Length: 381
Image 1 (cartoon, rainbow, N blue to C red):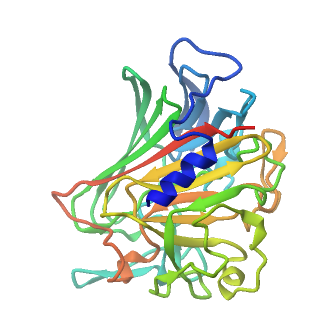
Image 2: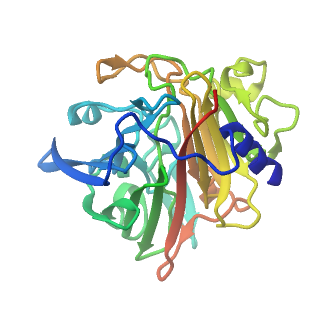
Image 3: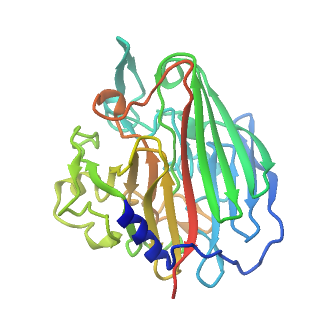
């Protein structure tokens, strides 16, 4: 862990991260709300949070979704570093979870089935034989309520959704909250909380697709990635973990020191073939469960942007955009093959069926609570 922290400091140019100054310096943080169309009969709103350095996050209430995230490059030029769309209609037409909050259970559950306290539950099988990201109408396709506020050093947006008992096959009602905090220290915190009326699996995650170049037409294969993980969870032919925690040493899955994403993505490896590239969960090197841990550092050498990710979650799903195919279009751009990547902090896939994995069962009286922190930095020339 000490080595990983030292590497992160080296990659960003200094142990004490420099303040980023954008081309247009702001003197106060702002939060603005605007209409963003309708999802059926429900109005959708979009909130724009801006910090004192001009970093801007746009979040809509449909799916509690990050629509846009503008950060400066090494010259201070602000550009959008996540894939997103200009209109609600594109999201409604069906997109691969761009920027969305996914749940009630992020990632896959084998055969859409699990047993809990002696009762068996069947979920929608919306990813071949498996259930993916909460089913056909997961949290990404729901309209959340929202309240905005400010603290001394951050703009805050808190979104809430109440999932009814039996929704998408899950037991018990679940009240879920996601809070976005854009700080003047150039960080975006994503905090999840939930309570349930009956025992239920819960695994909430954000599904942003990053491209630090600020140009969504450029592949992400030249990005350099570091992951604080000695092991990962290999998968079967349907991308369900086998239960093994496999060492990354000596494999294309070893990102303990920085590697260009494209440098080994086409290696002859059964796991890469099954994922059509990287689409796997890494087991983060946590000193103890639930403690904020450095998870990843992502860099684009050309723009000078660097993203540091810390989290309380035990796992990180790295997905290299293997199924992006040029559709749909947003902002005048089409999102082609591997022009975005996901670094989804979460619990392990198929945890309800894997007793050796960290538990994802939330019981009445308990509070589900997880936090991820995105820190936006720049590299030295």
